[in-house]
Image 1 (cartoon, each protein chain N blue to C red):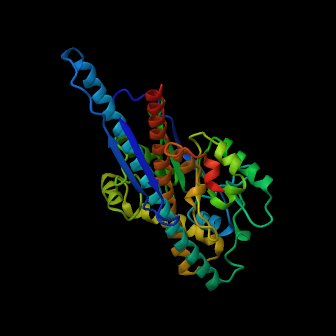
Image 2 (image 1 turned 120 degrees about the horizontal axis):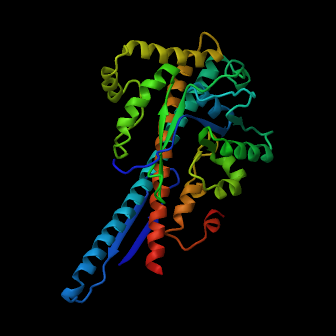
Length: 243
Length: 130
C-alpha cells in the first residue's frame, strides 16, 4: 500500500491548503484459506492507519483555517485599538498605564490530559473568561460531564456569554443568569477602567475582539495537541512498516 | 469513558504573552494579565529596545513555570529565538505563534507545521525557510 500525499500551499495568507491524498493498493494474488484470518487483521490495521492519517490531515486543515481566522480577528482588534487611541489620545491608551499591582488573571485556561497512560496523550484546553472564585465551583461540575464528549470542531467547549450553549447551561443552574452577566460586565469594566472612566466605544469593541481572539487561540491549542498526537501515531506506524 | 486513568487537570492556568505593545494591550483588556506576589508579570512587551537575551529569558521563564498553560508569541519575535522555539517539544505549555500588525503570519516559519511537514517532504526543514 502506497501513500502519495501532496501538500500545496496556495498562498501564505490563504488558509485553504489543497491536500491530495491518493491511495494505491497492490493487487495481491488470492491467498489460501488458511491465512484468511491474518489478512483480515491486516485489513483492520490498514483501516486504523488510514483513519489516523485522515484525522491528522483534518486537524492540520482545521489548524490552518483557525490561523486564518485568528489573523482576521486580531487585525480587527488592532484597528479598533488604533481607533480608540485616535479618539482618546495616545497618552490614554498605552502600556504605561498598566496595573502593576498584584492581581490575578480574570481569564484563565483549564488544562486536562486525556489518556495519560497512552504514548499519544492529548491535552485539552478550556477557556474560562472572566471567572471569579464563585464561578469556579459551578464550572467544574459541568465540565466533568462534557469531558466524555469527543472534541470536534463544531463542539465548542467555550463558555461564551451570548451563545446558545451558555443559555442552556444557565437554565440548569440554580443561580440567576442576570447576576452572572452583571459579574462579567463588572469584570470587563474593571479591565477597561485602567484606561480611564470614560472610554471610547471602540476600546470596548477592541476588548470584545480580543476576547474572541482568545477563544480562537484556545481552539488552536486544542487542534495543535490533536495534530501532534496523530502525527506521532502516523510517524510511529510509518517507521513500523519500513522496518 | 471506562478505563480512563489519571486525568491531570490544572483548573486555572495562565496565558503568557511575548508580543508587541498593541497585542499585549488588547489581550490585557480581555483579562489575561497576571501580576504575582513577586511583582512578576505573565507578559513581555517587545519593542525596538528589547534585547534578544531578554526575550530568551522570558521564553525560558514562561515555559518552565507550572502555572502557565499557553504561551502566545508573535511570529517575528519567535523568529529571533527560532532555535529555542524549535527545540521546545513539551506539550505544556503550548507555544502558539501569532501574527503581529507589521508581520503577517507565515506558515513556512511556524514550528509546528515545520515539524509535521517532514512527514511529507524529503527536504530538510531549514532549507525550506531560506
